[in-house]
Image (cartoon, rainbow, N blue to C red; front, side):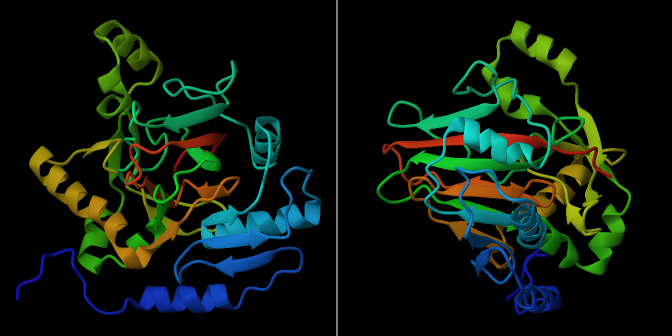
Length: 298
């Protein structure tokens, strides 16, 4: 049987080393239950209704960097408390295209039901079309379907590290264009689109970005916002990006979170992509998201 170029059966040495590293971590102020060998952990011992003390916050921050996405259960928090927790990690962004639960646009509300179907079931990295994309997001569940509506997360550091050497050489130093018009632009009139393009023109980011907090390198291209590779023939660019987009679909790089009411997820958007499974329609699913501004990708 002839295998496609991107299919690699068998174990990947990077994942063994990563599993061993995460297994050795110890925590004094929080409880940690890992979700998968590669990424994701549920955090206990933290009440987000109250200000998190500095020692606990430092371990939460360390857990986020280590596991790349972390989860909290049974957090009956208000929007103000959600924003207060997110602000401990940086400045909060306002989203120009998504509805919010208030006038400041800081808390984005995803409210899906029979009339408004969810369309977030594509692997993506939030706001990669911004000149300065997000550090991460804090997402809480307000209303969840009886079954379904999980969110999947993909580790793009693992995706990069497990590439073959030939592909790593090929993408080294390359930059890619990210553009909101491929998604949000489709919902705007010609006049609205032109106005938003003035504010948010296409931006170039490294195809492989470095996390300044850990030094780890991650694939930074997603099928929703990344349009093409700078300086490459368009057909070659499309073919290469198509291969790279598929890396998020590798189950060994993923974890899957089953929501309950008052669950909270926080992920490092610099090194993780996510996918909101749309298997719950026409049930209702209501989520609130606060996004933290990051830094210019390098």
